[in-house]
Image (cartoon, rainbow, N blue to C red; front, top):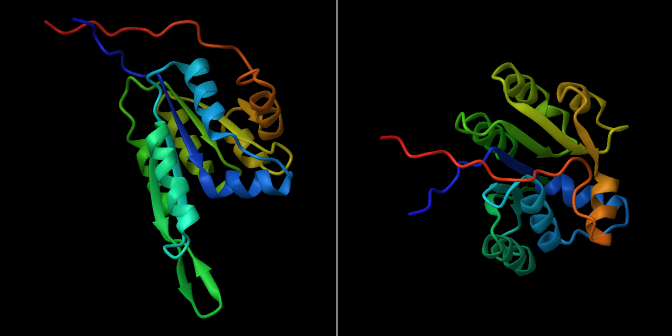
Length: 184
């Protein structure tokens, strides 16, 4: 009987930020290659959480989110709320922060793909609890996040370049999964 290893890393994607940042950079995100690269880099058991909003009237968005789930992403969504001429999303950042803060002790590293400085307190809290934090962001635009991650970051442009060229994630690659032995 094989023992399923506890993941040492968990990845959290601020999907709306990631999507709009890629659009601003005039880039496409290959979510299949991204997931493959994350699993190759951090280990096959690494959960990859995708937090995003959706418009219930937009069939394309709904289909996209379903496809992410079938690929292996853990998808958490919030419905866009329309009020007069405004659109709002409630609770998505909080849901991401709570999920990240509640990761079990076996998870030693939290990777956050975001540029939202609202996550600075989360990164500080995780580090206070002994977790290593890595941010994938636009470093020049997200200085507070980079600083809160103790300067462990990957440029989102470099990530997209590497994914596109098939190089995987930048940085040191994880070489093996550690297996937690069963308790007697």
